[in-house]
Image (cartoon, rainbow, N blue to C red):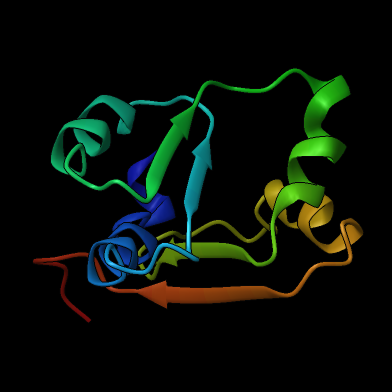
Length: 107
């Protein structure tokens, strides 16, 4: 979980939808932003952070989702696709992609 992923987009949606018992958000993995995100969104009953999952459980995890979300900061200059995209597409579940400007970033 890094800054270029702009996970706040999805986590802010979780905050807005916290009173919907039929919607649950799961974020799996590790990274430099994980501790801050867990702290900033700790009050959400509809959000669960999981550790990085072993490769042999990845398909199972991806198939649990009804929707995959892949936000990415508009400042991310990578010319390659995010590594998570292949697994998300292979799951056959709907997806959403969004590029957002990080707070304080200029155009």
